[in-house]
Amino acid sequence: MKVLVKKGETLFEALRKQNIRLNASCGGKGICGGCRVEVEKFGKVKACQFKIPGSHEVSVPKSLEFQAVGIMEGQTSFPDWKEEAGWDNSPVIAVDLGTTTVAMMGFYRGRQTLSSFTNPQRQYGADVMSRILQANSGKLKELSEVIRLELEEKCKELAEELEPSCRKVRVVIAGNTTMLHLLFGMDCRGLGEAPFSPVTLEKEEETWSFKDRNGNSYDYSIIALPGISAFVGADIVSGIYGLSLHKRTDRTLFIDLGTNGELVLADHGALYTASTAAGPAFEGNELAAELFGAGIIKVLHRMKESKSIDPTGMLAEEYFEKGFPVPLEDGRSLRFTQEIIREIQMAKAAIRAGIEVLLKEAKLKADQVDEVILAGGMGYFVDPADAVGIGLLPEKFLQKTKAAGNTSLLGAVRYAKEEKRSADAEMKELSKGAKDIILADNPDFSQYYIEYMNF
Ligand code: FES
Image (cartoon, rainbow, N blue to C red; front, side, top):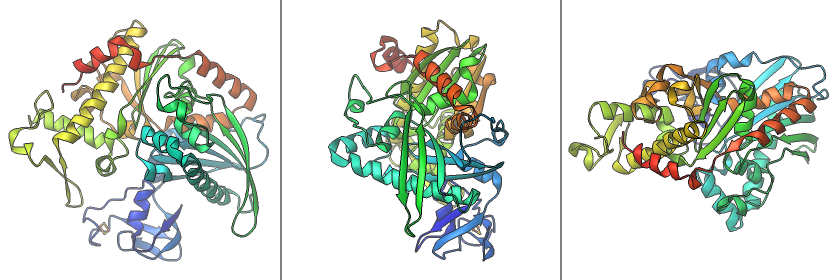
């Protein structure tokens, strides 16, 4: 994979920006060797000591690359291209355009390659709402350009890895409704306030033509997948499609834990969806960057068990002022302050209340759900025992919960590999057929929210 090391930065830091987390048991002192990677022209190097600026070709273990895009290894055995897929002879790139991370998988003639990068819109705010506010205060064009240029560049790099002389690329993009609005420069005013009306939820198709610094022309055929509502977007439709939730003959609860917590309950093909504004408690903030959302849940579970917090989330006296210390692998430590705990508490209460509302809507009890699927970067690492331990999930889910990795990317890949017309029809049907429940308008939601605020 290509990694850009900026001046004053180590390769370790540059890799981290791409979500590649190397082992750093000596804390970057150059002693343990855990961070060794192979760099083209330089051989094996310690990433924490490598500071040569420039774009380097780096070989990192495949499992770390998979982890960076949230793809689970089993998922890489995607179906083969359908003859009639309707794509002509050019590389295809599937993109999960996330609020925090953008993950990509490229394909060409039996080869595949992966890449990921931090969404450059991060500088405008960590979560969807702050980006909407920025867009609505005159920065829409900027927000649109910053992601579009980065996508053009990263897609070019990925496509050239697959076919060096390639000038045409097909790009299939799944992303939440706000990310797609921002990408296409669509007016976000309808997304910022009730009744939350997007400009469109339909599939978008565009051609992007541009020249690079050397004057080479490129043509990208862009397809952005359809969404269900302002807060249940194409990333979730893509996940439903990728996992065939709409075709299952059992009861499955799909939970995408991220900056927003989206929920889908599939009851013999009938789809109920909802979105909870989890905010940046589990993803997108500094704490999450160090620990991952899954680590945050684990720490809280331990704090609860050791009675460092009481059931209301109040820190024990000895930690009250300075917060609860959490040592990191590299010798530094973080502190869980009362403020942080409150933020997480609200996020978990919102997700749990959303689950309860969906169950009630479908007239089901938790034990009637056959399988619970945790999607998203965070769901990949979360231990169901911790999620149940802090009350994020009902106890009945403990034995039925499994991780599914980046299902948004999975669905985009599947879409690209199917015959286009039938894939379009299927996506359209499932996005139109889902019953989206607006939690803010739901009287049960506030009731459950208060009920599940405690640990
Ligand atoms: S040698 Fe690089 S982290 Fe230990």
